[in-house]
Image 1 (cartoon, rainbow, N blue to C red):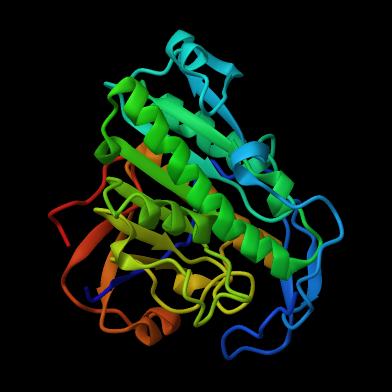
Image 2: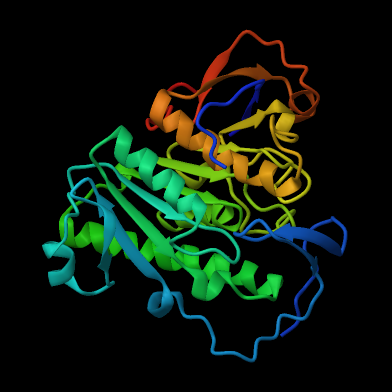
Length: 314
């Protein structure tokens, strides 16, 4: 499927709060990578992937927090395999379900989850599952964190399949959304669900270490897939990844941002605003090179983000 690219020109945005590790891709060996606290780390993408700590097991170590309008502030933990706990929770299989995946050195309480949880519950009565995979995503060896991203994605898909088997929920009603490493993981979750999730969103998916990597986000990872790029070529992935890719302000130098972490984070604030208000309008581009330089003049337009997938429109 040929990706569709949209340039989003932004001058103002509302509601923005204050073993052997084989070299991946064709980028430089040493790159700066942003963690969930906005700190930049210079990482060696050729660093040996050795880990002397306890090995990460996502089926054991991931924690799943359920939020609904009945419990918007205090989560109900869902333990894989514990059917009575799931059945006693506020999970409603008739509702849409959003699954949120944080980035490197982040956790369930970080800004990404706080911003999107509030936006989803304000927009619709639904299930929101916040995945805390920090046991795998907080490894200081960035190469291992990438490997753990893949492991976690497969485990999250198994968790979703178990929830659906117990409750009768429909995978087509799921919205998988992730930021940075979690943005790449969102595609991996969707792929492990056979591409049947209704909506998969990558929010400035991580770039370093992912160029040419077999597990990188793909257009076929969901029924509808979308990526929002706000820090291309640095913390975020440069080229198109989804059925539809949006490049607000050319994909970098977001209005009001003076530092790289601000650009990278801005994607989930834009996405939250789109969920609350219906989004921003993008103009179709001939190529991503046109999007980067702001030269997109085709007639077609499309709303970025939003709570409804744009199935049938692309």
